Image (cartoon, rainbow, N blue to C red; front, side, top):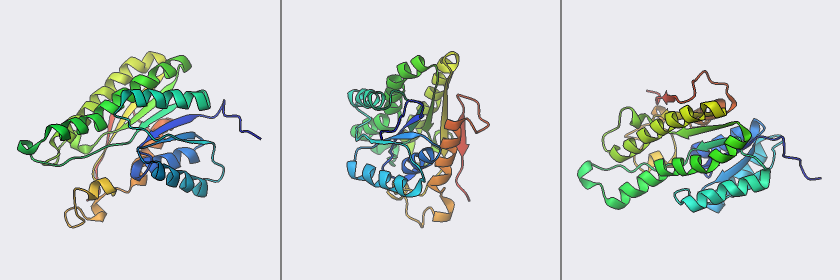
Length: 244
């Protein structure tokens, strides 16, 4: 018997192949959402789906959608595919990111372009593409992962901090424009998170594991914002400092 998904809320999660994105997908599935899993690597999406099926007692349907979210055509294709499959989209979690680390005088053009594309332009592309769906439904929520670097940049996180500061402001703009449409938007600004992205830049000597956030903590806040269970105004950037 085919599951009737017309009344099941649907969440799109980028960066769902690992770390915070994977945990966000898991928690939203556990909260009763059908989840669209997005990242560039199909094998990682398959691993995430297997994890959810193992961990969630009665999961709803899944949709694996490998995509390059820095490509606006691919982003539109993602939204179109989600609507075709489920008939709706209720939440967008912009979790995918990239954190290049370099001094200002060594910023390369390609690094700058990639950092802005992954961290800021993708958020704009995804929000723009899902906006008409939210308008038609008269509801929707967007949660984007920013960074504490957008508030106080760690030395060397220059362009990453600038991109994430853009996410904060774009979130506020989306919340303001979305208010009359019942569209909410939030940014989450975590400190160091124990993920492969962190360890690509810092050893455990530089940032001990005890001084890094558990990805589940960040994912839990994203879930609560999606569900409207956090005491946060739409448009806010929520700081989530690392433990010390």
